Image 1 (spheres, rainbow, N blue to C red):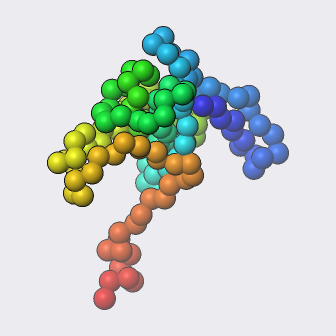
Image 2 (image 1 turned 180 degrees about the vertical axis):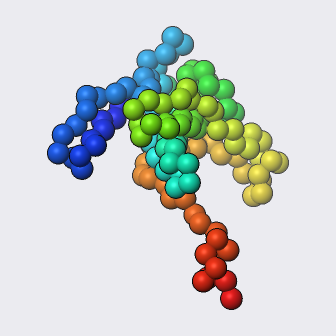
Length: 132
């Protein structure tokens, strides 16, 4: 996964930055579906992205093992506090691991955070004019 930044509304661009490489010692993985979310309070940027199983695997399996050969879908999150100049190490987003841990009794075989961008919701009670 790579990115480029512009600080002048797209007039010029910084060199490409590799955020994560799919080439791993235990095999290749596919990182994708990046979804950035900006925290309007702290100004931190959170980047959620998925890790898909090795190329050629027809169906993902139950579980959250990060080993590329496990066949599991993994969701990662990184954080930048300097507008994307640097990123934290990735942290795994742990989701319900067994069907009995979910409200609908189903297991997430696929966990894809994007592609797209996220929004941060604001509670209505923060704005007195919206309270009756």
